[in-house]
Length: 247
Image: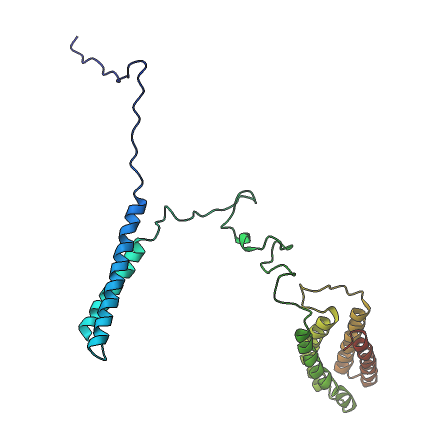
């Protein structure tokens, strides 16, 4: 037949070990050594040029400055060549539905001892911010003193029947005054405090704001006797609240 006989794969004789392909040693250390040497030599050359210029005169000549800049630039380039490549850098890791080592997940930045899985702040025992610190309470009290001082104008507006000025006074002060009183009552900001409104201090604060709200409504309706009564009730509850929180 004119067909070419099929080529058979070479097989080693029985009892003979099959030769294994040899592997060349990794060249990573040698390839990284060259840029480091270049960077070191460039820095030494730059220092030598700058030192020579400082010995010759008070100012470095333009040529020496140019040579020194070129040497430093070469050092930067050589140093960047010695940096690890993308293959040797840490790979991005994500978890799937919470399974796996998600080092690159958003929630990986949360402390391990943080009880709230959605809070990136430190655990209360280690964080720097202390909501019940005396300095924060004092700031709230200073703001409250200003609000209470302005609130003392309400009887004059009631007596002179100035409905709009009374409304403006209560509208501007009411919200911030509530926030500051709740901060002092619960010893902290929202999210850091116990918002249990069943405590005597919280109940007294809410009753005070109810009287202030009634005062605003009576002022808009120009019911001045009722407005004056609501103001008196509010001031009495405010005095009781101050005793409860040791204001």
